Amino acid sequence: MKSRIEKLNGHIIVCGYGRNGKQACEQLRLHKRQFVVIESNSDTTAHFSTDPSLLFIEGDATRDEVLHDAGIERASALITSLPKDADNVFVVLTARGLNSSLKIISRASEDSSFSKIKRAGADNVIMPDKIGGVHMASLIAQPDVLEFVDVITGKAAFDLEEISFKNCKSEFLNQTLGSLNLPVNFGINILGMKSPDGGYVINPPDQTIISCDMKLFVLGTNEQVERLKQTVSA
Image (cartoon, rainbow, N blue to C red; front, top):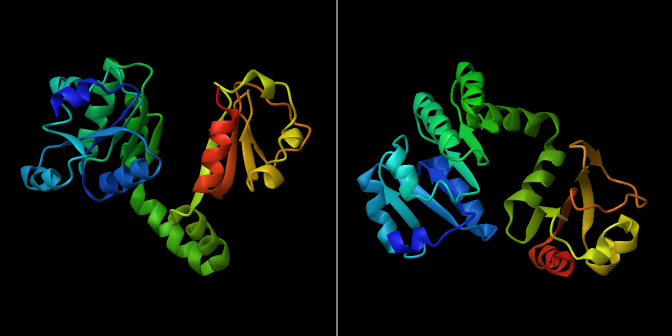
C-alpha cells in the first residue's frame, strides 16, 4: 500500500470516510481520478480490505506525518470532511502550509465555521446541511428544474464536465467555438465557460476564441465527453 501511494502524483487526498467523504470518493472514481483516503476509525478501515483498489492510510489527518504519508507534497487537491469543524480547520491550515498550490475543499457544519475555514486556507467550503435544505425547498418551488439537474448530475450515463484547453493541440488555439461544432461532431452541448479573466459566461457565443487559459462546461454522455477530451488534448 505504501509503495503504491508513493508512486502517486497529482492525486487527491480525502480526509474522513463518513457520508460526505464516501460520496466524494464515489465521484472521484466515476471521473477516474486517483485518490488516497485518510481515516482514523479502525472499524471503517477494516472494511477497506475488501476493495484492493482503494488506497488508504489509517491515521489522524490533522497530523503532519500522516499527510506526508499520503503524499501531500505531490497531491493536486485535498478534500476534508471530518465530523468536527475544528478538525477541518486544522487540516486545512496544516495542508496549506505543506503545499501552497494545493486545491483545498472543506466541509463545514456551522455557519460560524465558514469564515474560519476560509481564513485557514480553503479554496471552497461546502455546507452539506444547508445545501440539502435549499435542495428540498427548490424541489417544491422548481420541481422540474431540480429533477432535471438531478438526472444529469446523478446518473453515470451523463457527464456535466469541464474541458480545459491548457494542454490542447495547437491547431485548436485561436479558433472559434463555432468551428468545433460540438453538437454535430461530438453530440455535446456547451452550457458555460470560464474565461481567461476568471469570469463565467453562460451559453458562450460561437464567435468566442479558444485560448489555453479557458475552460468549457459541457453536457454529454461519458463516451462523448471522453472523445472530446482525447481529440483536443495534446
